[in-house]
Image (cartoon, rainbow, N blue to C red; front, side, top):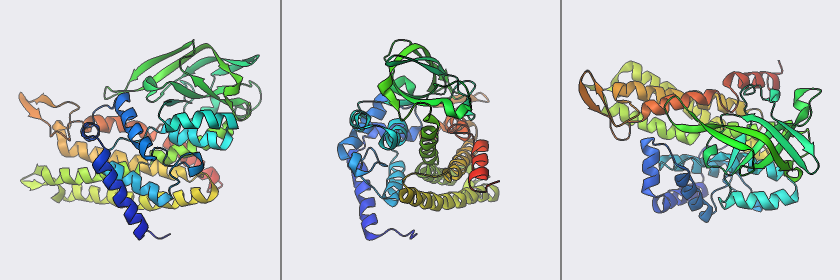
Length: 395
């Protein structure tokens, strides 16, 4: 694999840069740069900008309305969008459900679901985890009992990211109650306006409202909303999770965060010298930069492999583990560099004095605490190591 951009790829890189220069509103990039909590309106505004350009579904083939980009082009877009402080593309409909419908959905589902994702008319959220079924997802208990041409759904989902903005949810539900747990799971599409659904906010450690818990009480879902075959949803679940874990790697986000960390190291002084000249701090920055460069190469290699075989493989667990570790280390170093001014608010009192944080750094502590979750969601890093041990090392 040639890691040097071709002339065509360099031209595409410039096209992406020109697009963000001309089309990314300052109020959106400012919100991302400052670490402010993004609203549903800002996400939707950004999605519609990308949709108008035809760049919203970055991983979709042209036949379904995507740009049909190569792995390198997707990598370039990821890096440049982060460099311009664009928000992440909310992945649940675009990077998770979209590929599932394309592979497992019937013709009606493809015709109805995919265009509404592309137009940003539907916002999907994910109904996988439960209070007693997170990394051990096969133990889920939310049930769907068949009643004529409907399923009746009862149960609870948790850690539903950005569910407060969604109008749809895709859910794993239990439709068979004997035999191996994995053999009784089905994949349902549910309208959140259906009677019997209640969503409650969960406040995270830094105070943000990013996740929710969802309760289902006698919720009637048309049988036609079943994706694939009944009781064979575990195959779909695994397919979706490989796409999710690739996205969690966050190569572009980490590259931008590293540049911000270096700038911080040059501006913060310790003993009269820039912090970046401190041997211990410089060594930690160098180590995380080496790890990030290695992950960039691994990410590209796996994107090419996924394009060849039609879907990501279990190797995405490597990206999930290393990607979350690298991002957490960068956020930790930024928090340590700022010390007490890494507060999640513009100013606070320290030793009786008001300390004002730099505008672009005031939320570093909040970012640090928020990113602690990334080594758990999408399947904990411990589970990812088990997957690698079984599937790749065959132990």
